[in-house]
Length: 388
Image 1 (tube, one colour):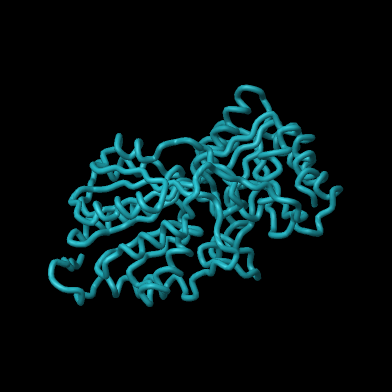
Image 2: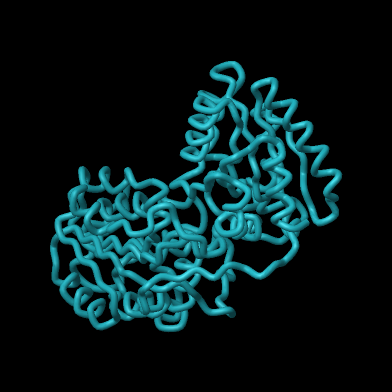
C-alpha cells in the first residue's frame, strides 16, 4: 500500500490533523505526512510523547467536533494508556480518534528484545482498553482499508476510538525523505571520544537506539568488553533517571549518561527532578541531532531547543555545549577534574554507518555482566562499593 493512498483514505474519514511520535514500521507514512502530506492534512505535529498526541486529538475534537489521527509505535501505548482511559474513554469524555500503531515485535517475527513482550501484548492491550482494531499488512487492499475506516467512522459516531495496527512491510518502499541539520560532527565520533576518555572505574548508561549500538561497538573495540555500560535498549527517555540513581549509590565513581535529544524531550521533567536531587559525579551528555534518527530521522517536535540552557535552569551546576571534536575533547578533560554535576550538549549531524551492529548478548546477559562489574573492586583505591 502506498503511504499517500493510506493518508488520503484517512482524510476521507473526516480527519484533518495528525499527531504522534515517529516509528520505523510507519517510516513511509511518517515521511509522507511530514512532507507531501501537507496537501492532505491541515496540520501535522510531532509530539514529545504519545500521551501528548492524544491531548492534541482531544483539543481537536473539542474545538471542531472532528476526530484526529494519533500515530505511534506499539511501545508508545504504555505512554498513552492514562489519557486514553482517564480522558478519551467513552465512560469519561468520549473523545473519538484514530490510532495508527506500528506493530514491533509481532509474534513469529524477528525483532529487538525490548519489543518482544509488547509485541505479544499489543492486540490484547487494545482489547483490554476496549478499542476495536484492524490489522494492516502487505496484502491489505485499498477496498479493505476503506471498509476498516467505515468501521472506524461508526466508532467515532459512538464516541469511541479505533486502531489500525500496521505490520512491518505494509507500506510500499518509496523514496525516503532525507533530513539534515547544520552540524558536521558525527555522533559516532563523539561517542568514540567519550569512550576513549572513560576510566575503567567509570559507569555508563546509554539511551535506546543507535546511541547504545554505537557505544556497544566502541567499548568492545577499545576496552574488549562493554561490562561498564548499561544499555537502556527500551523505555525511551528513562536512561537519565537510571543514571541519576546509580550516581547516588556509586558516589565515588563518575556516572556518564549518554542521552539523545528525542529521549530527553519525551520525559523532560526528569531534568528538573535530577536538578532537585543532584549527584556531583553525574555527567549527563545529550547527543543532539534534532531528529528521531533510530526510527527514520524525522525531526523532533523541538528543533532549535537548547537543552543545555534548560538543564542550567533545572539546576545542573556545570553546563557546556560543543559542536566540534576538539571542543569536546577539551570539555571532557575539564569534566574529569570537576566535582560538580555536569550537563554537556553535543550537537551532531544525522547519520550512521550502514553496517552498524546490534548487541549479540541478551538483555538479561548484559544486565548480569553490568551488575557484576558494579560489585567488583579491582580498579584501585577511591572506588566506593555500596550494597543496598
